[in-house]
Length: 323
Image: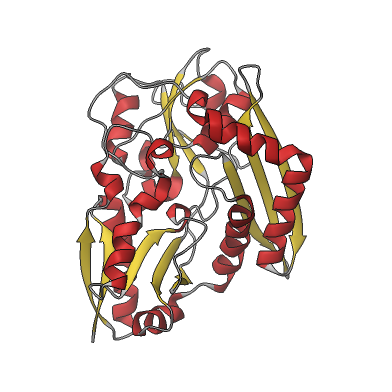
């Protein structure tokens, strides 16, 4: 049996799927790649938060699974919605790459050296609120398009800097363009950032074949992070960060919820905890955020998230998730 791996057509998505296929082939499993165009790839002129979120990059792959045209779907874990359709599951999380965010600032080099009023490009509201909380003077510009397009905006001077996931740059061999890796204290990563997730139908041959690829440490941490999203019903319209690491036998989870403060700035709420059960730990951290005023911040974020950024005056930027 040849397993068919559904993937988006971007260079990064294809790299990730070829990597998964190589791991399966080492186990004696024949594989074929099935590249698909998603609705998110076709909508080129609007932010994800306005057109349905990151689920637009997953739907067509899930349809291929449901229709029997594919056996597995390969995703960046951070781009998978917090709730899956009935009958679907994430059967494996692969060993995580570095989850931190990367700054590409050809002139300033470092975040602290960005000039006052610098234009910083990112497609992520999570990054936007954290960077503006540290530097209210920055102009955060929403940019979409493939990685090379976004890097080009910084190198040509259209923007002073762009912020992307370090993992994606490494996978594409572009790490040399990074001028600073941002510490998690400045930019806490998105849930699942740096990890790959394999989706399949429950109990299917594909799920059974991919199961051995699961990295237990990555899985525990990502499941804790996704539990935060599940409790807060968080998608790309809400600035949520969640990052877990193993701390001995326990998991150390740090979370953040951001949004407008009602005075033209941003507000951040933070919660963290340690525990053994990933789902319980994530739910408890989310509850702490809610107790600190998270419900009001969630409502404000969903209503005013586009106001956290300024539109970029440059046509033709293609649609891509935040990796």
